[in-house]
Length: 312
Ligand code: PEP
Ligand code: MG
Image (cartoon, rainbow, N blue to C red; front, side, top):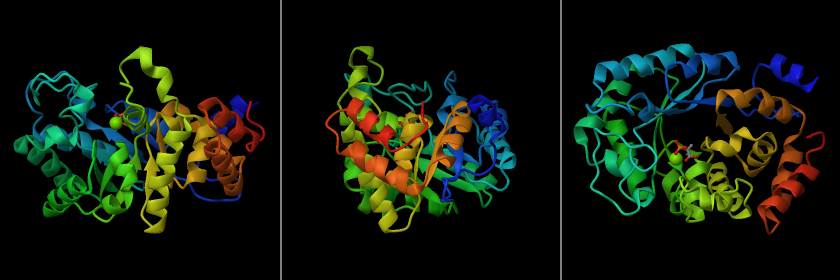
């Protein structure tokens, strides 16, 4: 029966008491747009643009980028589309953004750090985005560690006429200093995959240490809470676009911690929408508080679920 309810459930994300939580899709290639529309996504919360160009040795032209971004904006004329600038390096190597050999690529020159070193590539991407900009477009940088980086990115975007600019919170230093980061941009989005990797010093590509970055880990929830409450205080949006948002019970906890939107692979949207609709904002908050009070990930999960009746 629940399966049928998932399939039927479309429409805007909201809690049982009507608190709105736009449910967005993560995409990486143009074909993902169809899945996002099919699953009833309200927009795109994370466009991983590096996936458009993973196999390329030449930098993508401005024109082919315009095409890809325009397609996403046209698919969601009413919703927002958050396009992330190239996150090359570590788990997403890009041949046209070469890096020197590094002993620890996840701690090396990836994401914004590398983007910054290739002004032509940056110009082509921000220029393409500015050329197709419509009111729904948001531009966001990955791998931001400091307020200085957030400020630099905001300036580069605004200088090209891009007005709604954000950064990912996926490095603990940015979560700890979310207030200063937020002072320099219009929104943030928490990437729980990398935030967990860096919080636990456990490479996301090394299976042997994967148990350390359990998405229910209370330390990770604390970092999310820190960023989300800083955003709530200054009334700026704080989404979550890491894998955590795709677990229905954890999605409720993220809302309870203050996430204003959730973005996930399209396949997870129906279940998250259905479970969110069955619980009130107050239940989400109590689940979040109970989870954070626990010493381990498995206790946190159990404690949250005790406040979220009806989950199997
Ligand atoms: C994340 O780190 O949580 C995230 C959403 O980005 P990616 O998985 O692409 O690094
Ligand atoms: Mg990331």
